[in-house]
Length: 78
Image (tube, rainbow, N blue to C red; front, top):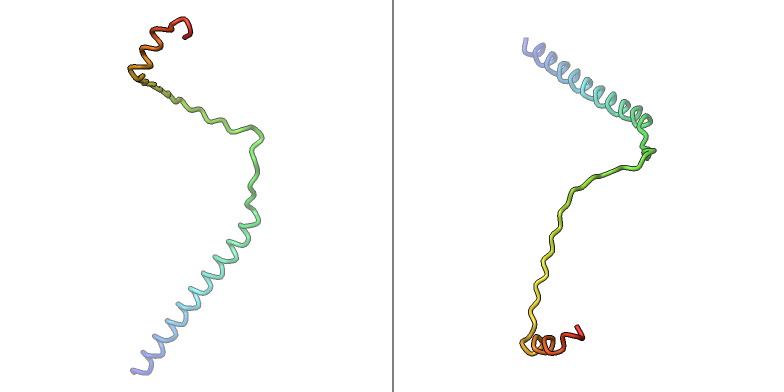
């Protein structure tokens, strides 16, 4: 009776292994067939990306006291 149980378990394990191998084979073949169907092409119209960006720039300048006096004295030049 023990020999029958061992043989039954072994055949069931072999069947599961064969089923898994078959599933892997089908997946590999299926992906190979699908690979020929995929194509990548550029669009006919250009891609348009609209961005609303606000850029603010603040310029802060400081003059040396001597330069400030020179500009005030010679305002006609500047």
